Amino acid sequence: MKLTSFLILTSAVSLVSALGQLGFDLGVRITETECKEASDYEDDLDAISPYGVSTLKVFSASDCDTLEILGPIAEEHRFTISLGLWPSPPDKFEAEIAALEEFLPTIRKATIKSFLVGSESIYRGDTTPEELADLINEVRDVVKDIKDKEGATFDDIPVGTVDTWNSLTNVSNAAL
Ligand SMILES: *[C@@H]1O[C@H](CO)[C@@H](O)[C@H](O)[C@H]1NC(C)=O
Image 1 (cartoon, rainbow, N blue to C red):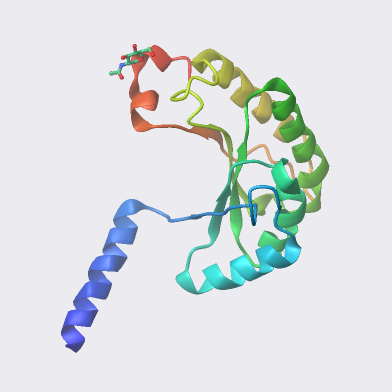
Image 2 (image 1 turned 90 degrees about the horizontal axis):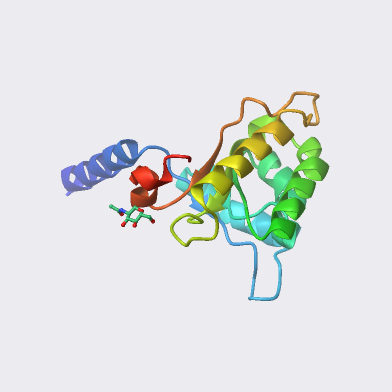
């Protein structure tokens, strides 16, 4: 019996290593219209911590003031954030950039694991590959000049996107 449990644990662990590092996709709303508050995030991170997952993924910096509220809490709990940014419509993208400029300086750069511009925006046709590539470059330009709370810049934090594998391998999307 003990041996069986051990073997199951071993295969689970090697499966995780084979998959790479796991993260947790964190919702930022309690209901469709109600945003989470700091205390909700505290509860979330307390609940997730025992699972050995230390990276969070969110879709937006500006929705529900996510970067403002979650950033310092994640940092305090030693989580890193893969920070999503909506590339469209243009006023949403501007709000994302404004959130970066205002709130990245409130945390340490090590708290941000990556900036992810768009989520399936090529697959869904929200942006063309060329438009998305331009926006990714724009985010790179913006974050390289933002200083974190210790004066370090975010210039070496990866900036990329999330999309379906066939969107990423399709030669029609080479601009990306
Ligand atoms: C690649 O993208 C083009 C343009 O969207 C599409 O017509 C084509 O079917 C795609 N090819 C594959 C293999 O998905």
